[in-house]
Image (cartoon, rainbow, N blue to C red; front, top):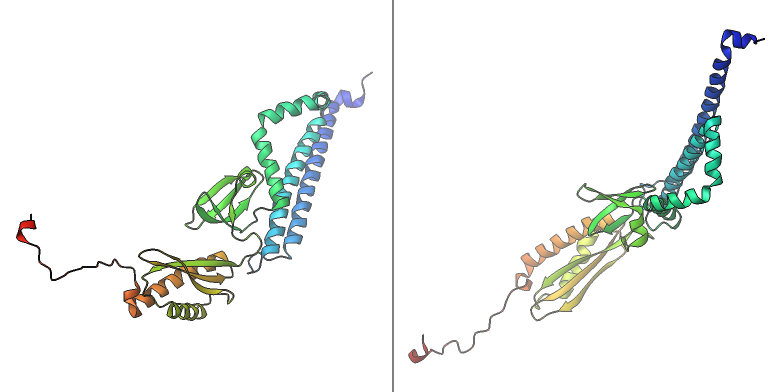
Length: 292
């Protein structure tokens, strides 16, 4: 004799209600774990301000938690989907057989998704070893810019002219890069001048100090002017100056270069590079027989 549920057709409804509630619980629990991860990240990074001048530690923490957050969210989503699918009996048998042959499946997936897995592992390595950090100033492929975003598989670099350079994470593990802010945000800038041998070095050195003291871009640490090379026609003069970060250093170099050139033009124009021509026997005349 059939039960009351069978007579009323409620058995199928109960099955789907149970499955739906199970899936909602799995997805809700996964969503809750993701929110907890995001909350922990916000609580940690809220104690560090990446917009301050000396923000090295803040950028380290921000980079680590940003990448690790993506790693944990990726893992949670995969596990959530896997558990949800395993709740169905028909799919559960397939899942068990897949887990039983995980070694073979791992080899197949490894060969087919080698680059993607390598990029993800490189992203995790960047989070731990930190060859680059958020807001680092780097030179890559001849381009100067700042690290704007770091994901598991690629890094976005904001170029100084507002372009964006997208580079795979494996690039930072396999190839050398210039990181101007790896250990600190302050940096030393250089300005090269090419002058005549008549240039007054001491006057240039004093002028450099006055220029640096007259601008807020200088951090008051480094101030030097040296003759670094001498060719047959010109002197190579290098001015060294320090700034609190790479952006300030760039502006300071441009400012010093313009002021130094203007100083030479107004006060010592004979010190600018020029070509000398020495004429000997100026009064001697050329015999007509030798004229062409």
